[in-house]
Length: 83
Image (cartoon, rainbow, N blue to C red):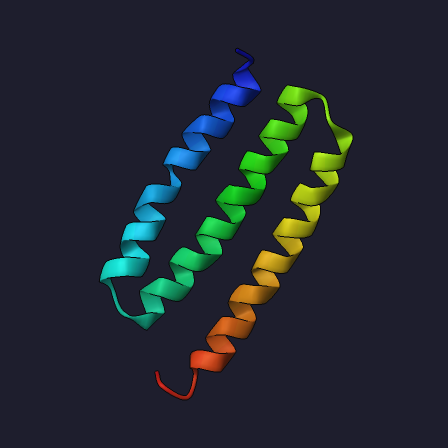
């Protein structure tokens, strides 16, 4: 098992606190946890790309990072009327 695959596994486990915050707290905390989960997931996909030697997965990680940050901003803008 490569170090990059082990890092991807650790990053996947690090998503559990983000899910817990999204489940238990209010809207402001959920938006922050959503942004953090997108960043952690992009890093996990990048570690998988390096671990397996697949350059296509690295492109997917870059696109995921860009879309997750934009999605978090759009989600915060949508929730603005209820905050």
